[in-house]
Image 1 (cartoon, rainbow, N blue to C red):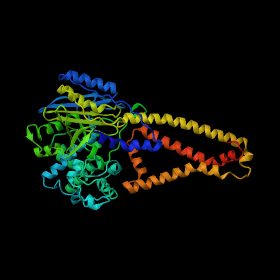
Image 2 (image 1 turned 90 degrees about the vertical axis):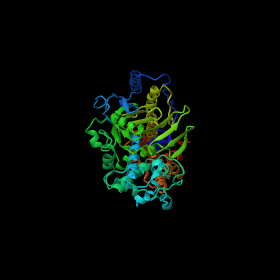
Image 3 (image 1 turned 180 degrees about the vertical axis):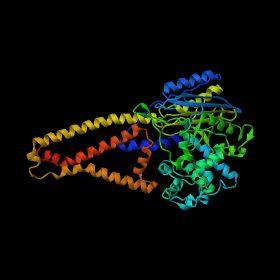
Image 4 (image 1 turned 135 degrees about the horizontal axis):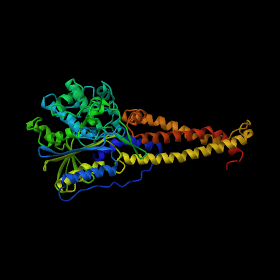
Amino acid sequence: MPILARIRAFAPTALLLLLALALVFTALGTPVLTAPGAPATFTEIDRFIQRFLEEQRIPGLAVVIVQDEQVVYEKGYGVTSLNNPSPVSPRTVFDLASVSKSFTALGVLLLQDEGLIDLDSPLSLYLPDFHLDDRQLSDKITVRHLLNQTSGLPAVSTEPLAFYDGVDAMEDMVAALGDIKMYTNPGTAFEYANLNYALLGALIEEVTGQTFEDYMQQRVFTPLGLSNTTLDPDEAANGERADGHQLLFGQIITKNTPVYRSAAPAGWVMSSAEDMGRWLLLHLNSGRLDGEQVVPERDIQQAHEAGAIFELNGEIVGYGMGWFSEITDDNLTIIWHGGDTLNFGADMLTFPDQRLGVVVLVNSQNSSVMHHLAADVAGMMLGVDVKLPVPPWWASWQTVDRIATGAIGMATLIVLALVAYIWREWRYIRGHQGVVFGGRKIAAGPLMLRSVPLVLLGLAAGAGLLVVENLFGFNPYLAILVFGRYAPPGVWIAGLTIIGIVSLWVIALAALAPFSAQHHRHGDIP
């Protein structure tokens, strides 16, 4: 997954830690695994993947490779769950995360084929209730802008507004957007936002009268023969469903997260390596599968064609409709997309000139280099060094878990300091009760000074609520609770622990202020 996408994915939980203690991040090196040389054999690729799995301690993954018009390699590695281990197979179902966007994009393009929508018409034409803070500006957002991630919708600040559940999830999401402020005009700049594709799901429901899940099943998954692909968690659980995994202070644990319907178009299609092989073949062969034209060639071309061009790590990158694209320095054209949830990862790469495609599905978020594997496998197939844009060091859950572990260590020191402070004050109180409770006048200066942190804490909490609600249109504390259901438990525990300890310190300072003032008055404290 590219830098901008992964930053948005990690930002809400990272902010939880930052707000808790303003932690200073220390960069951790990210190794880049490469595989240049002569094309590798499948035996060599198998050994490479097995070694990668073991070295990175990944519970399970699945790989599929396609060439020309056929699947040439597909295999599962490791186990589906650490709690109830069974071997991963090509039919094991994983969360696709943001790879889901390529499916949603095709669903929208099929509506265009049927004459139900025009990509260059305003979204508000199909979703009359859709509007942002500036109605005139939001009325300029077209369906194509959403597909190309050029709508102008801000990314991080709108992320909490994409998460609603229940039958009316799409309507609730659209109704919540009225206070969003745009900072760029639609169609002028690329900004990767999950809300763009969540809104495409709402569009599909409004235009077809079907739920997003039913439409995608009937118009995309079933016609393409994707028998292991679904948007229904219960249906996935009835098959070979992999459990997700996260880190808890360095230890890998099994954890599955809830699915929010409104966010499903952006990141919750569930599929297998077997089905993803067919998906790659569809895109490498211009909409043909099993010798038949099952999707119009124009739709595949539109999906891959860059509608936005931007610079990433010094490289010129394009974004089409659910697909990134790049021409490397070696003149290698790569069309790809990656994805992360908090417990799964996925990557799909296609090389149209070489008619090669690779997908890697992973059931864990414990490796900072797991997104290198698909490029490494492709490089071994081609005998070249394949590199995609590398995310910043902090944009991995492994790094965030290390920060959480350090925060718990820091919290321990703060607790010890708090206990020592309270013990010192208690000893003084017990030894000088006559002074403390003797009815003497308490020095106002020290009392007020010690009470300042409590007042500031309350003011900061209230100000944070007002600022975020007015600028971004959502309650930050409710957003933290929502994302807390997804966050690795170590992050959640560390964040709440730090907040709780800081609050206790502030309360202790205020509560003991009268006694500290007596210390000051009687010369016990300089």
